[in-house]
Amino acid sequence: MKSKERSRPPLIVDIEGNSREDGPGIRSVIFFKGCPLNCLWCQNPESKKKEAELWWDREKCIGCGDCIKVCPAEAISEDNPFFIDRNLCALCLRCVEVCPSTALRRVGREMTVEEIVREVVSYRPFFDTSGGGVTLSGGEPTLPIEFTSVLLKRFKEEGIHTLLETAGLFDFGEFESLLLPYLDMIYFDIKFIDPREHERYCGVDNERILENFLLLRARSRTGHFELIPRTPLIPGITDRETNIQALTDFYSHHQVRKTILLPNNPAWIQKLARIGRKDPFKNKNPIRKFYDPENEKRIREYFLKHGIEASFG
Image (cartoon, rainbow, N blue to C red; front, side, top):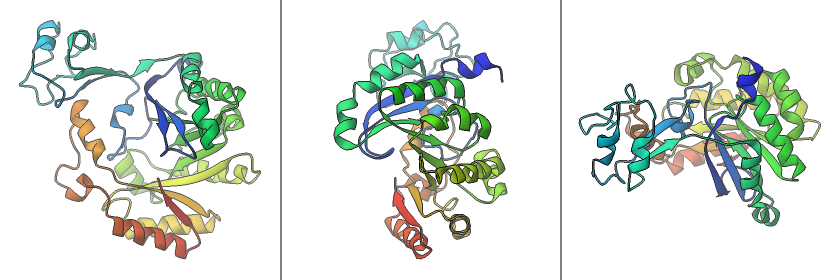
């Protein structure tokens, strides 16, 4: 990858100002656009592609037809399954400009490092009173690694606690030199131990991901940053007994004593139609529901039985 491509500003999906779910204290969460994985249950499917996308919310649409009239590509029609034919859409955004109800909007905006820092710093009083800070999420913040390095360095210059959420698929040498010096905490996603299962549900195998975790695990012993693995609990997929056992064995073998579990939240399914994508779990009812609290309790107790503290994110 050319340096220019790696350092140019990525698209930002959103900056959430007051989150209590993405690290300690009250945090600002920056959602990057673009991810090297393709997890079927992605909680932020609008962050998978690096390119901007067009979002249409049926519930907000008032049916005025103004967007249909102004679309030069004739990509918008009530006869389209997702209202917009993304194969025809040139993303000119004329429809967004005339939409009176904000049912149509662009997903992904360009922001400079200083624009991001300025917005996040405005929340500093909440960080200071709660022990919070900034969380880089996505998507995958390590894709534009040089840009992310500069951004993290600026946050440290501002004295802000930094946390990175990552799927773990990156070049470790670059990560260690460009990002690690400016990180206080890392949430590292480990979805499967079995590489075949990982490739089946996430699009790539997990050999490098597990290697990167172990390398970071070794570096974390210096105490300069905290590393915590996370696993989404997807009914019938990641929460299967064989996978939970494999995760427990992996953590126990490498002296990992803390993990975070992310129970399935079906809200992501509604996002798929809004960005013109099909639901891969259309006929699987458990995935279309909030996660069973009894399963949460059972899995948590299993980890605890093996000396691993499991909290819920």
